[in-house]
Image 1: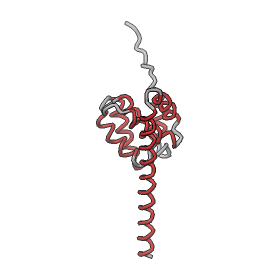
Image 2 (image 1 turned 180 degrees about the vertical axis):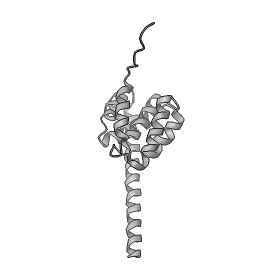
Image 3 (image 1 turned 30 degrees about the vertical axis):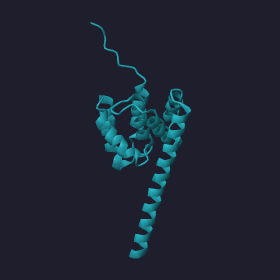
Image 4 (image 1 turned 45 degrees about the horizontal axis):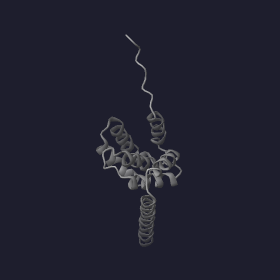
Length: 152
């Protein structure tokens, strides 16, 4: 009987990156949301993409570049979601803008399968998403400042 060899795949690098990113000081993750990431990543690797999507979406909206990257992968391949190159491009673009190198690599590959109009639409969506996140953060900050001023 032959010896069982470990499976080698492109996702091995993703696994290592995910482990590093799941540390408290990891990209876009902290102690509070690390458990959500670990659970979502476990769902992702087991093929339960709908459950992975829920966790990744929550953390992506909080600015986690690795979760934005995984959402981009899911949309580009149609894993648990309808395949949508514009949404994939949007999430990969956002993650890439935060320095996520694998997102940049996948983004470059994805653009070869998209029309100029699709790319423009995806870029517009990414700018709008980032703008909304900044506005929401500013609104929260202003609200906290007002609350502190009243309390002080």
